[in-house]
Image 1: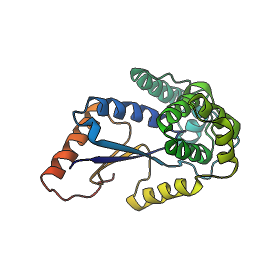
Image 2: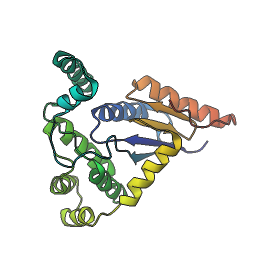
Image 3: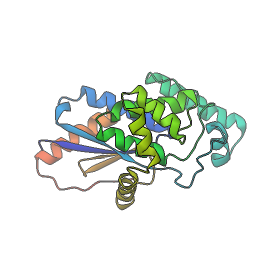
Length: 225
């Protein structure tokens, strides 16, 4: 195998996805064949029917969906915040508001086309988990994209005109075809799938194994959880 394609389905309003991204990035940076790996981020909505209006905080949403006591919710949020800190990420989940992420995914599709996808993706993820940015607000999205070098007028025009909606839907259709039901999900060369914010060592192992299997002619298909 000369080139390995890694497809990553992720949602911006998923705090685990940011942790997973950082761990995968670390594994990829240390991988000897880094230059032979092509990464494509794919759109995925955890709550496609969700409101664009900010309401509950992430802890409140977690308490509603997962139940338990308030102390249970606080422990879950504290655990996730600590794991994020180990990856150098700052989380203020009490500020985060779960909203519909469709427009944010449209922005990322546009940013990827313009060569600014990595910077915009990082900025949106950080703004959501650390600053309470409302990622359904078109003005907020355009402002955050402008911080990463995208023209704010052109970006706002894309957002206002519904641009890149088809690209988002195509990614979501592909996820359904593969059986991807949660994020983050990493598919390596259409051979192996890793679900969740796995340790760096797991990503490193799968990168190596995918190249090895391809080199010996092993025929496999993506193994999804």
